[in-house]
Structure formats: C-alpha cells, structure tokens
Amino acid sequence: MTKSNNGAFRALLLAMTSSAALAACATAPAEVAPVDAAVPPMEEAEAEITTALTRAGVTPQQAGDDYYVSAKASVQARAGEDFVPRAKNVILFVGDGMGVSTITAGRIYAGQQKGLDGESYRLAMESLPYSAFSKTYSHDAQVADSASTATAMMSGIKTLSRTLGLRSGIAYGNCASVGGQGTDSIFEIAEAAGLATGIVSTARITHATPAATYAESADRNWEDDNQLGGTDCKDIARQLVDWDAGDGFEVVLGGGRGAFFPASVTDPETGEAAGRRVDEADLTEVWTAKSDDHVYITDQAGFDAVDFASSTRVLGLFEPSHMQYELDRAEDPAGEPSLAELTSAAITRLSQDDEGYVLLVEAGRIDHAHHGVNAARALGDTAALDEAVRAALDMTDAEDTLIIVTADHSHTLTLAGYPARGNPILGKVAYGPGGLARADDGKPYTTLGYANGETGCPPGEEDCARADLSDVDTTAKNFQQQALVFQGSETHAGEDVPLYASGPGAELFRGTIEQHEIFHVMGRASGLVTYED
Image 1: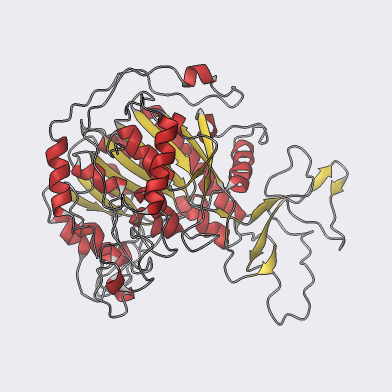
Image 2 (image 1 turned 30 degrees about the vertical axis):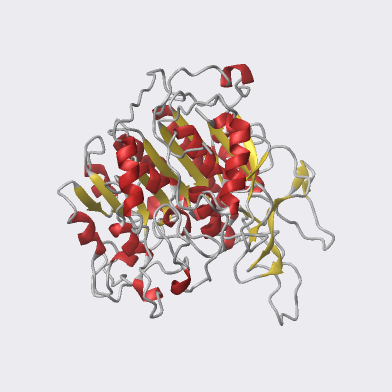
C-alpha cells in the first residue's frame, strides 16, 4: 500500500494553501559557536522573531490515533495560545543509533581528530540553544527499531516495530491488515502544501529512516519486490518513484540502487549484477521519465555535474547498497560526496523554492557500525554528521529555519575505566604516565566497549578467556571492541536520546518528550498542521 489513497486530502491541502503568503527576514546565517565558546544565553535564544507565516494547517488522517491526540495536546500546552508559526523551512537530522554515549565519544573523537582537547570540545549540534531527551520506545517494544521510531518522528504516532508509516492496528507482515491504518507524514503534508522536500541518507534510501518519509509498509524489509514473498503489497522502492504527494521530491540522495534494478542490469560502479528486482523494471527510468528536469546520478562526477541551484530534480544513488562509511569514503573507486556535501547540495536545491522546504538528513551508518561493534567507524560517521549540521547552520537563517538534531534510538556502547584526560578515545585505558590499566584478569582493556555483540563469548566456546589486547592497535578502523554478551549483531539500546534544536519553534523542545512529539513540533512550528480543536 502506498500513500496514494489520499487524493481528496491532497486536493484539499493544495486548495487551502495555494494562497498562503510566506515571508522571511534576511539576516546573517547562523554561526556555529567556536569550540571554547559558551552556549548562547537564553535571552538571546528567546529573542523575538517578527516574521510570521499564514499557512493553512491541515488535519492528517492519523489525527484520531490516541498517540497523536496525546502528543498534540502536550505540544500545544507548551506552545500556548499566543504561539505563531514562523518556520518557513524545517531540517531534521537523524543520527541513526546516536545515543548519549555515541555523542560523548563522538565529541572526544572529533576534538582529538582536530588536535584539540576532546573532552572540552563542542560539536556543532551541541551549540544549538534548545535541547531535550526523547523517549524512543515503540507501541510494542521497550527497545525499538528504526522503522517504528522513524514513523514516530515523521507521522506523530507510535506504531509496531518493523513497520513503516502505518498505525499500530496493523499486523506485521500482513498486507490485508493495512486498510484504514495509513498516516500522512510531514513530508507528504509539506508537498501537498506546495513546499519542496528532500531526503539525504548514507544508508539505502529505501531503508527504515528515509523510507518513513514516503512509504507505508507492513514490513520494513520489503525494500524491493524480491522481498515481498508473493504478497500483493507495493515494495518501498516502487513507492518512492510512484510517490504522488504534491509534485514529488525535489532531491533524493543516498545509497541502495540495487532495489531499483533487475538482476539483469549491470551496476555502473561494480560492473556486476547488483540489482534485486524480479519485475524487470528499471525504476530509475521511471524517475527520469517524469520530466526533463528529473535526473539520475551514481557517483561523484555525476554529483559535481548537477546544478543544484536550478529546477533539476535529482535522484542520486551512490552505491548498490549503503554508502561508504566516512572512514572508507576516500577509497571508493567511483567517488562519493560527503554527508556535508550532500546536505549542502540538498539545501541549495530546496532553497530555490520560495514556499519553503522540509528536509531529512540521516547518518544511517552510525547504526551499522555499532551493530558490528566497530566504534571507530561509528564515531567517524558521527563526526561526519556534525559537519553536515555545521554546513546547514552556515547556509540557513535561524529566523526562518527550524533545525532539529536527534537520534532514532541508542546502542549499547559504553565509556568506562577511568582513562586519563586526553587518553585516545579509541585507545586502551591508561591512568597516566604509569602505563596501561589492567582488568582483574591482568589484561588491558579499551575505554569503549559494548554490552553485547559478535565479540562476546560464543555458545559452546570452551575457552572464553578475554583476548589480550596488549599488542593490538585498538585505534585501527577495523578493530572491533569487546562485548560482554554474545550476539551475532549488537543490539539497540533503550535509553532516551538527546535532541538539539534551533530556530522558530525550537523552544517547544524541553525536558523529556515523547519521540512522536517531534512531528507535532515540526507541524506546529511550520504551520503545516492545524492544532485547533
């Protein structure tokens, strides 16, 4: 099922918003505070912004859902009766799996990589004046997956883990159960209101977080028709190119072109058959056939050739599966843009639209590195996300652009062992000049570790003695941190995750919030969603 059954809804949206007048103050771009600067004083953060929007908000189809109702009431209570929507643009950054420990380790890592004091270094995201904690549980799970958490942020409800864009009344993996359980994401609402939209991800563009912007699927794994198992549902890649909200996405940049091709097509980078479709369709041709402005690119050269300051609509799929980790990107034969470059290009393209825009930027591979108990790559991608945030702050105006940086969930990464100030975050614990610290087994250990993962003691292992790391370079990018409990893949963690925000409506984030309230803040701050009873 796609988000195409709301024709009347979209027609109403367009009719209601076609005469909406938008205005924005032209001031200097927001600056990222220097490393040693203090957080902006609250009185500056709360300075009055005079630009107001006159958008006609709408009521999405999920408005009767209990989760929606409660989150709406919570956000409206914080907003008060005098709140005026002023966010012409909304940018949501999601660090997939970027919990508190990842941000702390990422901060130290980024500072140390720059030759600075890692502990006191401040990430660009940490310079944003408002912050909160977000509760990430799903409708049916204490520790959630990325599909349900992305749906929470995009559609304002909690739903079943492993499902996308649907309410909790469905049955997982059951096409017949999705009727009447659809949602309207903030992206669909924005498109129907005449705004520009874009998604950027280092994961497959059909993966859970980006897919939640446009897809409805009873199983997040239905990324291509080869995964449907004989069901009559529409796969996620097909839903992307068939997405009929407004005039469709202006820019889609990420990985995952294998879901768009049949196996008979040779991949342009690998020279091998990397396609997975069984319907023999080339979905990139469906995209480019939409208009002369629709283009498809696969590598750095193609990216560099696009004029993003134009009306071009870009589908960029840079890998058969996920994009490269930041630490491996330079080794890619065809070349790949950095997440900061992708973000800058997307903002440039979306800014051509006078009505405003909504943009998702996901650092999807933080999560993948954590699943592989590979902290180096997780922290490398965290630092890359922060550079993307820095780029967005430099390119946008804090008076008309709401920027949110958060995570969908956490991971089991820990920092422990009393390492000395300045100890390499990827290194072995050392108290100081006296040498390495030793655990009770007499062996050194790393500052970073995982509660579970593939480096734990496997079942049936007779000798479960912990490996001696004395002669191991734990700072190498391929090093896998030690784990306590064996799991073939390290798991998510369930603690609340940080959220940082700036711009109009950012003041609605404070304290501890429900994750699905993020949608409601975006909708309320932008005027895209009505909050009148």
